[in-house]
Length: 278
Image (cartoon, rainbow, N blue to C red; front, side):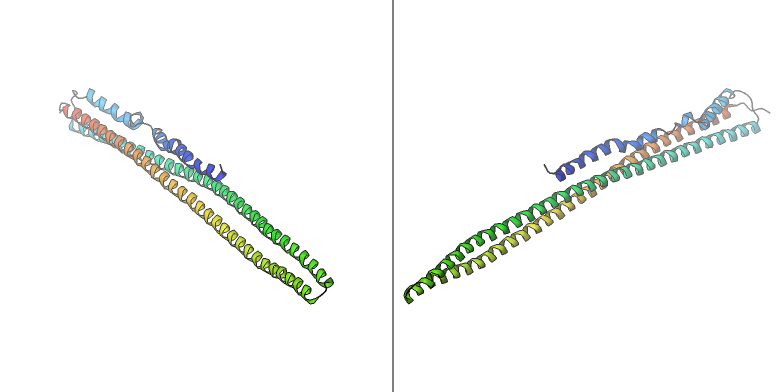
């Protein structure tokens, strides 16, 4: 199996691991935000409402009731402000963790892409080198074959010329010359055939190089497209996790506000039950 295919099969594994581990971070960090009921503001409101409940049967003047009402609203507002601050803090933490997850994920994908593209370059460079080696061998085989043929013809021509020089009679000399001419013509034809075969080999080599370059470009585009899609998938999943975290925070805050409103109403009811004191 070539190295580029090995690297290509790693991308889904890395993406899966990244989404299974890194993308859980926003929810984990959001969970680090303390509950409202553990805060001093919430405890102060609860404590004050409990105090008002205990004073609900104690006579109080209008001024005292107004003071209690003001203190109750201040403590309620402080608790509401704390709830808002916790919500904003949780939302910010979720956003920071989402940004971190994207940076980590994109960095991992790009790092993997760089390794895969390097493997592709090595693979296609090796193919190009093999094609060049095969081309040189093919040219050598053609040249050797025709060199051997023409060398044999040249020997025959040399021998025939000697025979012609020693021959007696015009007819015999003419016969030998015809044999020489045939071999000379054949040698000329061989040179043309050699040029044609070499041209065919060169054309085939050009086609092979073009196919290798095209394959490399196609494989590179495929890697880059797959990685771009992986990044889009990563961003979309991070966004969904962030939105889910924010919805959880919003739901928690609504429950907190309802609870605080209930505490406020309980305190007001306790104040209203206080007998009037002249």
